[in-house]
Image (cartoon, rainbow, N blue to C red; front, side, top):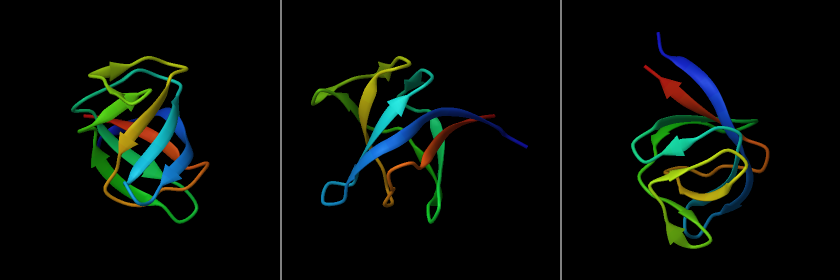
Amino acid sequence: MAKEKKVGEVTHYFGKIGVAIVKLSSQLKIGDKLHIKGHTTDFEDEVTSMQINHQPVEKAAPKEEIGLKVKEATREGDVVFKIEE
């Protein structure tokens, strides 16, 4: 079974463009597999696109706020976990 490690929390969600703003507590990079879980949210996704200040980045460090393209709606307070195989 895969382990999950908390890497951040959703602080905002832009529904029209399907982007979650995530405050990171751990490093994240393109290709990482995620599990986003909250009150009504529960889905897995892969990091395919992430931005800091509207600039595409390959990886982001703890304490940074990133824009993360997601396939389903998220809500403020949803927890973002990285799935570690």
